[in-house]
Image: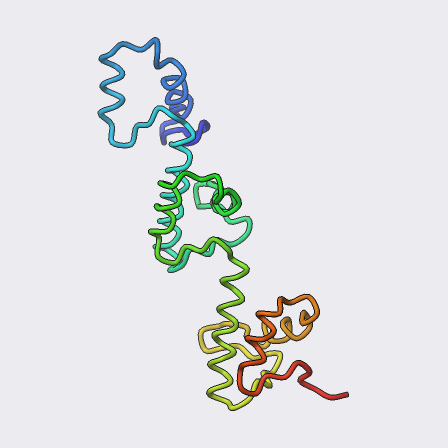
Length: 184
């Protein structure tokens, strides 16, 4: 729950929760027990914030059928899920093993979006080559499910000089692959 969260009737619940966390050492044992009896209660705001992001990610996946959150995406209630997701990917080396495990348990979660997108394009290219018998993909070619294969192929051809040798070889191993689709 964010600090600015308010209930429908305008009660500043986010501020109240924050105040309870700050005053834990001054709260009566009875109040501490009441708060801790709530299934969603956590004393540590960092843990609460992470869990909120994780729950928002799960909701996003259910609603969209994937977990590739677009840049700048915010939920209907204003939660910046794009930022949370990018932070997890950027902090992979410092995340706790528990958090890494939770993210890995999400079918469709990827740590490296660029790698995932390249692999997706590559798979479409292999499929196209098998079906058409060549790799002369028209620039405006869009697959039946909406993937812009023509643009992906064009990018690969223009990026040959900066592309890894491994990717170059993988493309060259596709039957019919050519770097220059047109001769001038």
